[in-house]
Amino acid sequence: MNSITLARPDDWHLHLRDGDALASALPHSARRFARAIVMPNLKPPVTSVEAARAYRSRITAALAAAIASGELPAGARFEPLMTLYLTDRTSPREIALAKSSGFVHAVKYYPAGATTHSEAGVSALEHALPALEAMQRHDLPLLIHGEVTDPAVDVFDRERVCVETLVAHIVERFPDLRVVLEHASTREAVAFVAAARPRVAATLTAHHLLYNRGALFQGGLRPHYYCLPVLKREPHRRALVAAATGGSPRFFLGTDSAPHPRGLKENACGCAGCFTAHAALELYAEAFDAAGALERLEGFASHHGPDFYGLPRNKDTVTLVRERWAAPDELPFGGETLVPLRSAEDLLWRMV
Ligand code: DOR
Ligand code: ZN
Image (cartoon, rainbow, N blue to C red; front, side, top):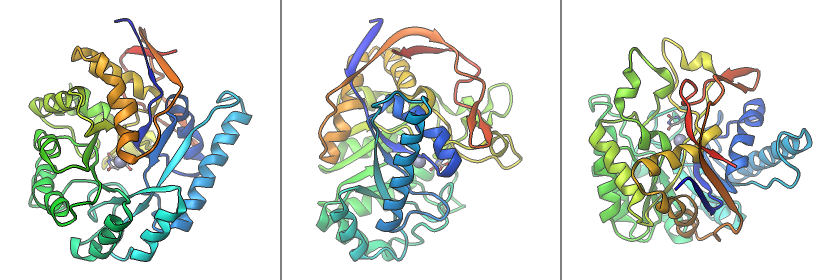
């Protein structure tokens, strides 16, 4: 197969940032995806429906500006699906408001300290119980960054331990709650999701499907491959590929594209996050092609996500062709630049 056409996909996990950075990041996603679940880990975090409403209008303004400047074609459409950032103090009332807003589609659980801008996250599950109960009642999905923060737990084990403890506990305690384990990176995580009760799913990133932890140390320290959850050993990567290409509706596309300026990545204490939005679909196509499973890409990228979220599938299509191209070495990012994933190496699929 040298060409593949699929229903337009959506990105069920995306970091768009804010301000000038948002203006730079947004067009890459809007060219490929119809909708995206937008992560709320701004500074300050998006903890209220009012803050989500304001952020949403900044995103739609950035979209209009990109169209006006010719960066995106006239008529380009992209719908930001907003999320709230769960804290120790998120009230059941805020959850009810979120549900009735029509534009907040999920709530994100960051264990406090687990990753970038997660300091305001949940310090202990007990504090979040009233909000979780309200989410179950209003049928608002919970998105979990599944890593424990205990420094005694090895960084490569943090997801597995979180799945065995926090995630398993939430799934059992709230039997009707829709739960997405975000950016699953281990075989234990995908095995858990595959065997879980209904209404439990996981997103998978392109970088976790394409790389194992060796990429972090290939000939030297490679900060642009550093993200959280960190890349794992090869058997884990293979388990993720098997989950993504297996046809199960529990697994769907979520890039976790997370831009940081070059200087904060190439740094003595570099930030976590891989920017993949410039070639997101192309990278997934490469991973599915390598597994001999291109015919499964459409379900993963375009059907399973909207089905889980109870939204209509997109009606238009996108086409990818097998064709080498080189991504730029760097891209503008607000007043700075960022280094996209795979900048040093050709991509194998191109979107037409
Ligand atoms: O690598 C990551 N980057 N993981 C996250 O969970 C957050 C993200 C970010 O916001 O930069
Ligand atoms: Zn993320």
